[in-house]
Structures are given as C-alpha cells and as structure tokens.
Image (cartoon, rainbow, N blue to C red):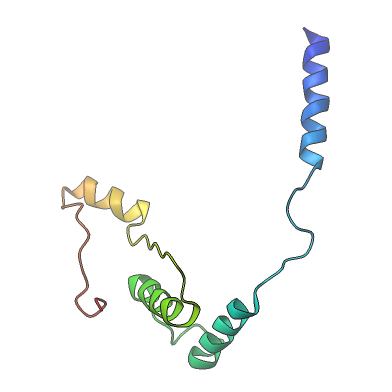
Length: 102
C-alpha cells in the first residue's frame, strides 16, 4: 500500500512538472490593435471607462464591430449578484438596462 502511494506521488510530481501551454504568449495583431484603440479612446487611468455591465456591453459592442467574431457570449449575472437576489427574495430575472440595449 505504501509503495503504491509513493509511486502515485512520484507520478503526480512528474505530471505537475509538465506545462503544455505555449512558452511564449502569442497574441493576434487584431487583438493588440483592439486594445490599443481602447487605450487611445479611454486612456490608461481606468477612471473614465465604463463600469460593471456598461463595461461588458461596451467591450462586446466594440469586439463585434472591430473583431467580427462568429460567436459572442456575455455573462451579466455575477454569482454574488445572483446570491444576493436569492437571499433577498428578489427576482432572478436579468434586469435590462435600456441604455445598454442596442
């Protein structure tokens, strides 16, 4: 039993040493340009860009317009928000911000 445990520990250590991820982070030029345009528009401070759901909406709209993805999924419900709604008995339906709707 002890021998099996030691073998498994050795095997686990070998698995943990292996890193299948790329050694260099390769970013597509389109993604770099996307973030450069974002930075030119909002700057580096982070104090002028939208917050919360408005930030997700703005990023999504810009990505659709500039990167032209085939599929976009946005999760506006954070687990904390959902827990709070359930705890307080409020509806778990997503509230739509009329200004954020296209």
